[in-house]
Structures are given as C-alpha cells and as structure tokens.
Length: 293
Ligand code: ADP
Ligand code: MG
Image 1 (spheres, rainbow, N blue to C red):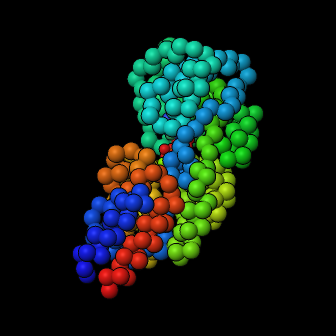
Image 2 (image 1 turned 90 degrees about the horizontal axis):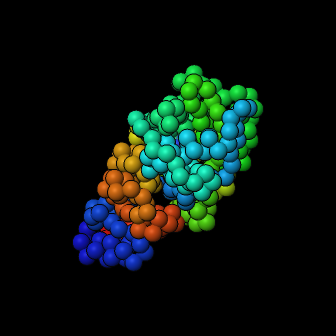
Image 3 (image 1 turned 90 degrees about the vertical axis):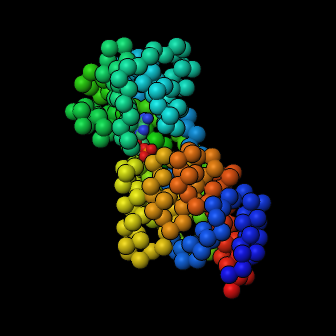
C-alpha cells in the first residue's frame, strides 16, 4: 500500500467534509455491505418542536405544560428541549424540578411543585401503573401514525396527557439512502422510538428494514447480531446512545453535529452532519484503496 494514495484519500475527505481518524480506517470500508442509520439526529434533524397538547379529562392544559416543561428543562434530549421551550413560550416561567432522573431510552422523572412527574414512553408510565386512558391512547397512536413523536405525561399516580413533538426528516436523507444503495449497501433504520414513527420515517427516505424500540444499551447488540449473521456493518449515529454501537461497527461514522462521545467513538466524522457524505466517504475510500493496489 502506498501511504501517498492514502494521504490523498484523507485530504480529499477533508474537502468533502469528512474527517478520517487515520488512513487505516479506509481498509474497513472495503467489506461493508450494510449501513445502520440512527433515526433521531441522523436521518432526521433532531430539532423537534412542540406540536400538540392533549389532556386527560379533568387535567388543565397549562398545568400539564408547566409540570412537563419544568421537568424536561433538566434534560438535554431533543424531545425535552422541544417540550421545555414550547412550554416556556406558552405558560411563561417554569418552576424548578427536584430529584430529576433520566431513564435511558424511556423518558424522565422528577418532582415539580410537590408532584411526582413522569414524561416519556408508554412503557415508562405503565411501569408506574399509570396506563393511558383509551382516548389518550388513540390520540397518541394517531399522532404516531402521522410520523410524529408523542410522549405521555403523568403525575401523582395518573396519566394526565400526551405531548406531540414533530421532527423533520433532513432534506438530504432520501438522496443519501439512494447513494448507499448505488454502492450496494443495505440501509437499516435503528431507533429507540416506536415502530410506527420509525416506519413512517423509513418510508419517507426509502428504507425497508426497520429496527425500532431498541433501548440505548441494546443498540450495540443489534450491530453485533448483524455481524454474527455475516454482515459487515457501517453505523451512522450522533448521540451518546450511539457511541458503543459506533465503536462495535466495522466502520463507525459520526455526525459532526452530534455529541462529543459519538464523535470520539466513530472512525469517520461527517463534519456538516450531511448523511450524503457518509455514502461519499465509502465511495471515496473504496476508490482510494483501488488506486493503491
Ligand atoms: P433515538 O434512538 O431515536 O435517538 P432515544 O433512545 O434517545 O431515541 O429515546 C427513545 C424514546 O424514549 C423517545 O422516542 C421517547 O419516547 C423516550 N424519551 C427519551 N428521553 C426522553 C425525554 N427526555 N423526554 C421524553 N421522552 C423521552
Ligand atoms: Mg440519535
């Protein structure tokens, strides 16, 4: 192998907005046949906005926003930011929360104004014996059917409402998926979000295979399972949740717009957070390797 050709490969990568950890990384792209794409922040912008408030009978909308907003104020999750800023706009000042806890991949819990508040997936509220009443359940399912993310809110032992946040697919994601296919890579969408939302996003960008409702610590197992099945896996992700999977993958690509932990775990960084450059990276390094031989 000529180090010169590799240097040229990495130099061209920088021009395209791809940072390559070291020339040896390019070797890993040779066998890759599958690309696992994290949904939130990778295929979608991850910039969510509060889009709807649904309350259980007898629950005041403003109180729901105040309690949920106050709790989410302590979380860095894109869903949390959307809820906290949406609540702030609608109700003004938010109280402080106490005993805040982030339950990875499920939601958040804490105390606001003396109420024990939960915000997150159905499963989180069910764990605390706060199942959604049928009207809220169907409203939540309807929002999810439209590809939105809906989270449930409960306090003091009862489900109180649903908050809908919308996250847009990046305008470049469908083109990126097409480029992956042109390179012979099978795209798979991987997410902690629910199946319906995942399916809607997948359809919008042209992905057939979806692995949804995966807990953060299980993302790495999904990659390992694919590898055990004989696939060589590239993984693209942005979040703290994705770091282990990025490290496990044969080729880890992290979004430059993502968290430092993810960037450190990846072999390549897509500086502009543009998924199309992930496909460019694979093509570039294959071409670089073929010049070397
Ligand atoms: P992804 O894999 O798509 O990046 P996560 O694993 O971070 O998603 O989260 C999975 C799900 O857990 C979210 O779709 C949401 O329902 C719930 N969740 C996680 N964090 C929060 C939060 N701070 N507030 C509300 N819901 C949350
Ligand atoms: Mg993510």
